[in-house]
Image 1: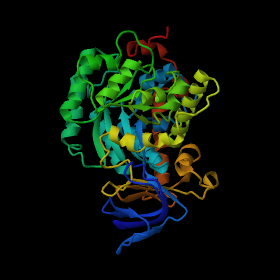
Image 2: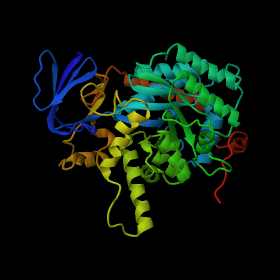
Image 3: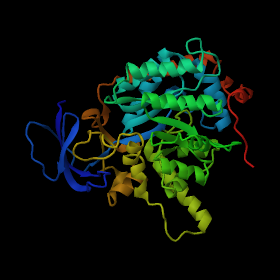
Image 4: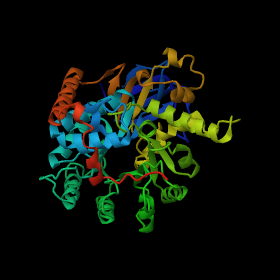
Length: 462
């Protein structure tokens, strides 16, 4: 397929405040960039794709996913957060080999693309060795997805001979930043995922400062359960360490003061409603964050427990917030959180949170052609009365027919492009089998809850 495409006749949702939606319009893509948009565009020497009866919109952005957990799909369907930490972070994480991480990240990134996600934040906190980091990164690049590879500084429960100290982990991240991820112009960019702040504060400060030295975005789990003492946000605020390069995750127990600090610093929050609701982290912070003026995004988090598509995440976040409003107000007379408000959370707001707002997140001339095509003729979208609302409340991953990333088709007319799906499936199943065999099988996963005390102070609600 060539480098110049005319996408003809679709209903276009731009998700851009300065670019009106087009009830029927064309999008011209050249060399990976949107060149022009409008009704009945004229252009020569381009391949035409007829999209009449289709819905064209920006690719979705998953602001928080532990892609390495793809081989563990649904093992945690009934896990609490304590179960998850014991099974995944204590037991399973050290059992992954670099080849397992590659298989996991490749399958997970392709799953995301198949569901219309063109950009993801890969919170990669399974870095046992430099080879693990290289394998995870290579898989994202092999998949052809746009990604923030957030190198996880968290140490595993067992000492690593390859990365034995906190300083060695910071140095390995520096290695990647100065070699394979030295440029911010590639589809995969460098980021840092902080260790949960149950480590000494001096180490947390060092992680933040190292990320700032590397000039990369930072993401961090935050206030996912009640904790004694100052919160992560309060600690950062006290030392002037907050900033627009910080993407906090969960924040279900964040105070109103914390949210104001995040908003005032230009930071953002990634809400992961499916995980938060299942694992007892508290209700998603969506409504409180929006009310505080925080840039709010959504993530799928862990397919070891839940689903991997953002259509589900949008619906859950919206309807939980509406349910909480009904609970507060009785039978609400007005639904204050509108369905269409969810779309920016997985498009432009998410792009801005990652420092990519000039590149992706909406459709407008000059931006990269990261876009998806939905089959609007499907019964679940027919008739298409209110397109933005329908995407949020009725669409699902099965409606995603085509996906383009920087002008290249990752999925075209229902099929992933250039992917040997059977080989991908075989490799991720082999990774699952190998990892589970190393820990004694699935039945042994919850046998080490007591080991949590050495790594996490979960606190307790009053």
